[in-house]
Length: 98
Image 1 (cartoon, rainbow, N blue to C red):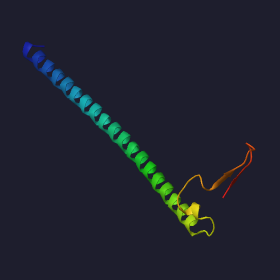
Image 2 (image 1 turned 180 degrees about the vertical axis):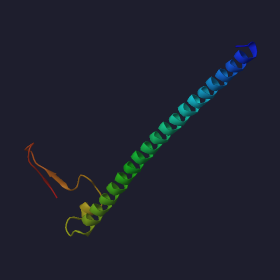
Image 3 (image 1 turned 135 degrees about the horizontal axis):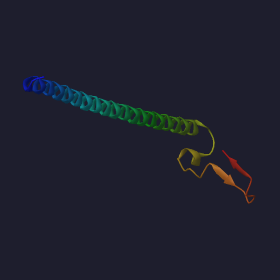
């Protein structure tokens, strides 16, 4: 084996090793980007679910307020006073909700 042959062989090994390093780095970066995308998607879905729950809760509160306003009876209930619908008695375990 001559010097020229061993030199070209080492260049081939270096070139192959260099390509493998670039491939490994590219795969690592692709995996990192994929993980970030999954995290972002999960976070956005969680935020969307929370927003939907909040909107549903607000809608139910609005419907309850509407039902209270339409109900005949005590006018203090329709004014939005949250404590006006409760009658508390001296007994700690007994209360009536309107």
